[in-house]
Amino acid sequence: MLYSDISRTKNLRLIIKVHNMKRVFIYKKYERFWHWTQAFLVVFLAFTGFEVHGSFSFFGYESAVDLHNKAAWALIILTVFTIFWHFTTGEWRQYLPTTKNLKSQIEYYLTGIFRNAPHPVRKTILSKLNPLQRIVYFMLKVMLFPIMIITGLLYMFYRYQWQGEMKSLGIESIEPIALLHTVGAYLIIAFVVVHLYLITTGHTISSNLNAMITGWEELEDDEDDKKDIKENKKKE
Ligand code: HEM
Image (tube, rainbow, N blue to C red; front, side, top):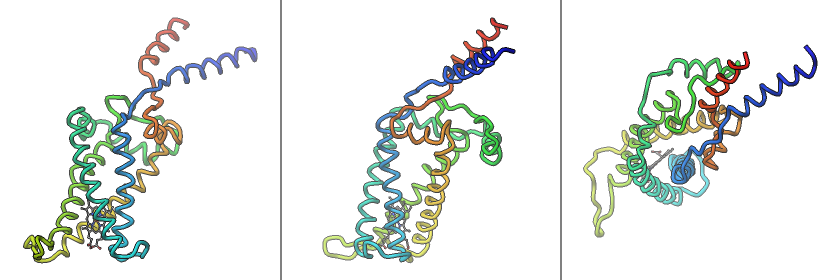
């Protein structure tokens, strides 16, 4: 084979590869606002929370409690708006757990990713999350965040001042609530660490991060795939 043929073959492959990627607007403005505000608040809550817990001293105990409470209210307000957004846009459907392709997704993260194997599940606008993400995010939304908010509010109000009087929710001991809140905090931190690693496992090392910043992501184009297959068949 002549050199020009080889380079033409190489170029053809390159063109097909570029051709098969499509820039798609995948994360809406509110979604990106919610994601980054929640990320900031969760990290801030973890930081101030562990200062309250006594792990270290930075703001000072009193200020840490005050900042933790303020950030907690901000997270509660954000959560209320976001629940509304999920239902009005129908985006909640993205988080319905599925076992379809779950095994291949787990295998991909355990071994395939280190062999440069292709992603087992294609990301599309209608299905942004892979089966493992669906399960993890679903658990975060229906279990971990509600547990943190409920135990946090119980923590705030098990003894509180009302019109100069000390009132109580009638809870005997705050200990089990504090324990659950702290265990939840460790689980959220574990999630954040894994999440940060998985951000780098997209189409390129920064494509997932860029998508959550700009809203745009490069996705493989099914339509182009079909066209290419047809054209290649004609050529054969
Ligand atoms: C909206 C949700 C949340 C609410 C309402 C809330 C509320 C509270 C309250 C009232 C306290 C006790 C402060 C005091 O001693 O006076 C506390 C402690 C704490 N919070 Fe939160 N919090 C929330 C979310 C979080 C999150 C997301 C994290 C970490 C990721 C976190 C980590 C902690 C930790 C580690 C403590 C210390 C627990 C202890 O030592 O007993 N909190 N939180």
